[in-house]
Length: 278
Ligand code: AMP
Image (cartoon, rainbow, N blue to C red; front, side, top):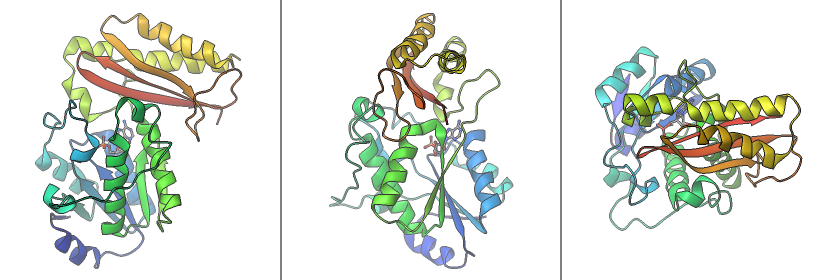
């Protein structure tokens, strides 16, 4: 496994990799969720490239950029064991050189749900992902359903900008008690960690209601909120029943829906989602 930092090194090593190349973009501090994407890429592609970059432009001013957990040596060990060919750990100064002023924005999809509560977040995501797509010249790129809106936004960007690349969305990996794996789970103390299972319990309650025939979007949203309200350590920021493709909030009867939420447990902001009717 080769580890490179500069774009010049990346270009040199990329030229030696057999196609198709599968790309797994990450912010590091890897867990089984990330590794599930790597394994899928390893199965599908002749070469696997993983990027580790805590992208400053997707963090808001009061968010956790400085506190974001990092452990590159551990990440390299995990990726090497998965048979990854190339790891690129870009430098901030090369991704955003002095005078940088070019941005990729997916207009409407970036403004709702997560985008509404994290203004500028998806502009940062789509800009960096476009740069990673360009620089690595990948054929396929792997993203997690855990970040459902991110997946929709990136698919839209890839389509709109004619990237010659297939975006593949992989299932959410969960801890045994249902909590979606996330690098941010390390922020939780033991009590908060226990409380954090309420996201899974809330989503599951809505899925179960849907499965026994409940179709009213408002009732399904209320079901999620009800379960969240049983956990005193959890403070919901939003609870949504939306169209899985357009991400528009739904009212009345639904046949397919993305149930999603952002919930603070202490200072940690957790997101999770499930899709029904697909
Ligand atoms: P991050 O390092 O948080 O930016 O995540 C990198 C990629 O891993 C993104 O495509 C995420 O959606 C994906 N990912 C994060 N957590 C999970 C999970 N629990 N299951 C599956 N994919 C995940």
